[in-house]
Length: 295
Image 1 (cartoon, rainbow, N blue to C red):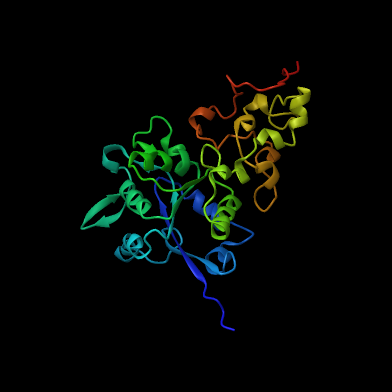
Image 2: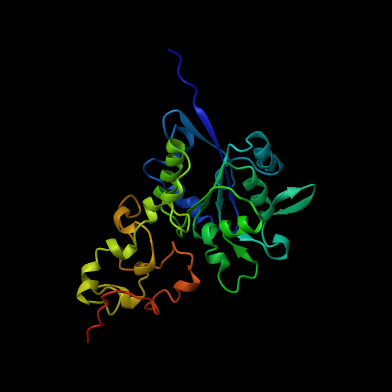
């Protein structure tokens, strides 16, 4: 019996204003490994065909820019666009360009817009891509914004999935891709109001924190290294949605609070400006049953 032909799912991964940390975190995916994701069938019968990704591809120069520009023509309406990093928009986007066309530098904003228009869906990978992130922090001279705000400004109406985090956990991205391949695009009720998958961003860090008992008892750490809840030391877990306490990082080795650091709220649209100072207690936030710092 002839084997059913594997369906190729083209993916175009464009990097805008990014430190490349989001690429690095996905390359460190453990189960499946990045080799499994790029070479094997992520789900039976379907294979991710990564046709452009500046960090991992071997090609360079005009040849790869041609591949990028041909993607909407060859795969119109059938490819997934991954946006990494926030998008510079001030002064016609001159603060970030990607390649040239007819001898002129092409702004990242124009690349994202052109690719988004003909994409099946868009995944904004990392907090910069989702909400603006660090690049959009004050004073933001380049006018950096996240993909959602950018697409709305360009009147591009395409399905968007936000996978924030600085960087995001590789599982959040890989599992989202696998879910799209298996079940199609997420239903509206599967995403929160910020277009994040509820599967990963459905609960507050605070709800599953192993130091929650300290919080309930009003026992707060006075300095780093002390036992107790880290609320007084600036923990943003009470306002941050992610499953870090359950999933852990580095193949289940540890996570921020497990290593003694407060959560810095890197999955939220207010990061970093609204989460700063990172090691200062949250203010103007209604936290139930917050005890007083023991004397």
